[in-house]
Amino acid sequence: DQQVKQNSPSLSVQEGRISILNCDYTNSMFDYFLWYKKYPAEGPTFLISISSIKDKNEDGRFTVFLNKSAKHLSLHIVPSQPGDSAVYFCAASEMFDTGNQFYFGTGTSLTVIP
Amino acid sequence: DVKVTQSSRYLVKRTGEKVFLECVQDMDHENMFWYRQDPGLGLRLIYFSYDVKMKEKGDIPEGYSVSREKKERFSLILESASTNQTSMYLCASSLYGLSTTDTQYFGPGTRLTVL
Image 1 (cartoon, rainbow over the protein chains, first blue to last red):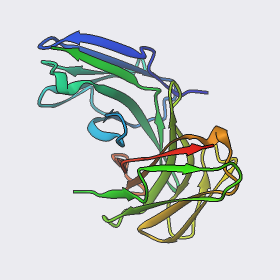
Image 2 (cartoon, each protein chain N blue to C red):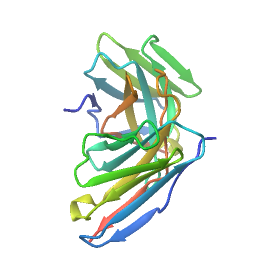
Image 3 (cartoon, one colour):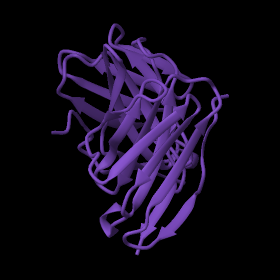
């Protein structure tokens, strides 16, 4: 059963506008959340993260918001640029005795139109 | 900078062949992972390892095995390749075993085609 869900497989946004990518999760034990960006034929690269004790984390054009009560997080990209066109994966981690286990969503393909 | 490398970017094998995918990380990370990525299914965990010679099954271990003889190297083995194992294989590593802010770093991936 998918514990991390990205319900929008794709998103198109005009250059300069805001891109909002959404992610929902079901496991209340998740304590750390990450966003990865993936270009075709490359591995995912880490983009930004947020701890469960925070509700917002910002890094340049990228901001991640966490709503724990709704089990929802979102990634905002402002302003969007054509180079942001990629697949974005949301991930969540849970700590066990032997280390952290990571759970990934199915990805959202973002296209930024020049 | 963390560097995770994978032995091949593209690989073509025949059904029934034994396939080895190698992954090496150069940052002394404790944890290593193998995923496969398929369209619409995201990243699915095959196996992971928290220490040398230690391995744990992920969500889809059937048809795969792994080996971790050295800390920096984690190998994925397809004992008898089948066409449904055609996929993008991604290796990842992470540093802290017991930190809530552990982050995974990925290699470039191996696109495996089984004919």
